[in-house]
Amino acid sequence: MTEELQRPGGAVSGDEARSLQGKRVGLIRPPSARRRATFFLSKPPLNLAMLGAWLESHGAKVEIRDLDVEPEVDLEPWLDRFRPDLLGFTAMTPTILQAARLAARIKAHAPRLPIVAGGPHVSALPERSLAEFPGFDYIIRGEGELPLKALLEALPAGRSSDVPGLSWREGAAIRTNPPPPRIENLDALPPANRELLPRGRYTAPGFRGFAGKNRTSCDVFTARGCVGNCLFCVSQDRRVVYRSAAHVLTELRLCREKYRADHILFLDDTFTSNPDRLPEIFRYLRDQRMVWHCTTRVNEVTPALLREMKQSGCHGIVFGIESGSPRLLRQIRKGITVEQATAAFDAAHAAGIPQLEADFILGAHPSETREDIAQSVALIKRLRPHLLIVSIAVPYPGTPLNALMRERGLLGDDTPWDEFVLLGAKPSWRTENFSLRELTRIQKRLLFRHYFSFTFLRHIGRGRNGWSGLKYYLKAAYSFFRLPTH
Figure 1 (spheres, rainbow, N blue to C red):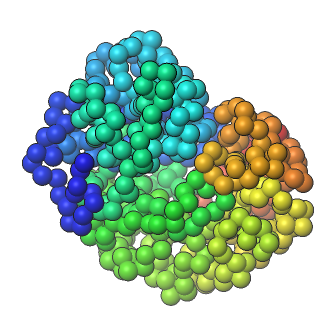
Figure 2 (tube, one colour; figure 1 turned 120 degrees about the horizontal axis):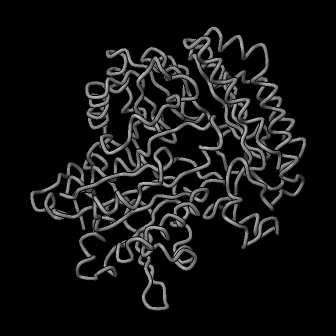
Figure 3 (cartoon, rainbow, N blue to C red; figure 1 turned 30 degrees about the horizontal axis):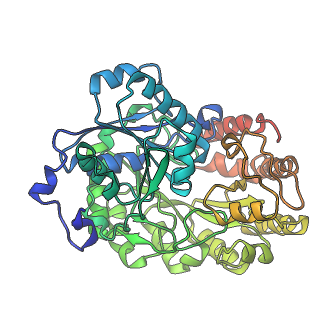
C-alpha cells in the first residue's frame, strides 16, 4: 500500500518512484453522446490525466486515448506500437456500452491484455458489470490511484486478491474486495499531466460559450467529494478532502506559465465550501489577471465572499438549485432553501458577477407535481439567472433515486443502459405524475422561453464575446431543440 497518500506531507520515496518501472499503461475514455449534440462541451478527461501523472510518478509509461475526440480506427495499430501491460477504461452509465464494445474489440485483437474498468457505473455494480461485460477482466471501485498501482504490482505474481476495491473473476465465481481507503492527503498527488491528452482537439468553449477563441482555459480540481447528499447523486458520504492552497497554486502556476492559461474552470462540486484556502488562491488569480468559473451551493456563499470572488476575476458561478418547491427540496435532500437561493442570487447580482447559472432538474423526485414545477418557474423568474440549465433526472445506478424508483415500480431492473442518458434516448421509466415525453416538453418550453427572450439575447450581445458568444448559443439551441421528444 502506498502510505504517502494517507499521511500529511507525504512524498514519493525513491523505492516508490521505481515500483512501476518498465510498466506500460493505456488509459481510454470511450466516446459519448457529445458527438450527437454540439451544445455539450468537449472537456478533457482530467481524471485520466491525474491518474496518468500518479502512475508516471512511480515509473510507469502512460498513454491516454480520448476516443470522445480521437478516431477509433487506429486503436489496434496503437496497441501494437505501445504494447501496454494493462489497459484501463473510465466509464459512466451513458458510456458503459461503448466501453464494453471497445473492450471486446481489443480482446479480439489482444486476448492476453488485461483490461480494467473504473468509474461510477462499475463502482456501483461491480459484480453485474463483470458478469455482463466479458471484455472487462477487473473492476476498480472508488478512487483509482491506490488500486491501480497495486494491481500493476500484483499482476505478475497473480496477487489480485490483495488489491483494495478490486472485483475479478475466479473460475465461475466473482470476487470483490473491500473498497480502498479514501485518499486523505491530496497534496501527495502530482498535478495532472495534461501532456498526455490530445489538447489540440478540445475546440469547444471552456465554459458554455465563455472561453472560446479569445481565451486559453485549464480545468482544475482543488478537492474531492461533495458536502451534499442529493437523492439523484451517487456520492453520498458528504466528506470532502481538500488540497492545500499552496498545492493548488502550484498547479495554477503550471497552467499559467506552461499553457498560457488566462481562464480557470474549477471543477469542484462546491468550490467555496472551505473558505480558509480561498484568499491565497484569489490573490494569485487577481495578480495574474486571470478569469475563472466555479460551481458552488447557495448556502456556501456570503455577500462578502461574492465580492471577493468578483474582485479576483470570477466571471461565472454555477448554482445547483434543482427545484423551486420547498417540499421537493426536502424530498431530494438538497439541503438548501428557496430563501437561501434568492439571497445568494441577489448578492451575486449585486457583486457584479457577469455570468450566473441556475441549474434545475425535472423529475428529481418521482412525486413531483405540476405545482412543484410552477414553483420552479416562479423561482427562475425571481433569480434572474443569465444562464439556465433544465435537466431531466436520470436514475443512475448507485443513487438513492434509482432505488426509490425501482421500489415504487417506476423503473425496471432490466432497463437497458442506453436509456440512461441525459438527451437523445427514449427511456421506459416515468415519474408518478409525468411521462418522460411530458417532462421533455416542459423542459424545452422553459429553455426556449429563457434563451430566446430579449433579456438573454441582450445580455449575450453586451458580453465579452459579443457576436461570437451569441452564435455559440444560437447554434447550441438549434442542436438541442432538434433532438427528438421522448
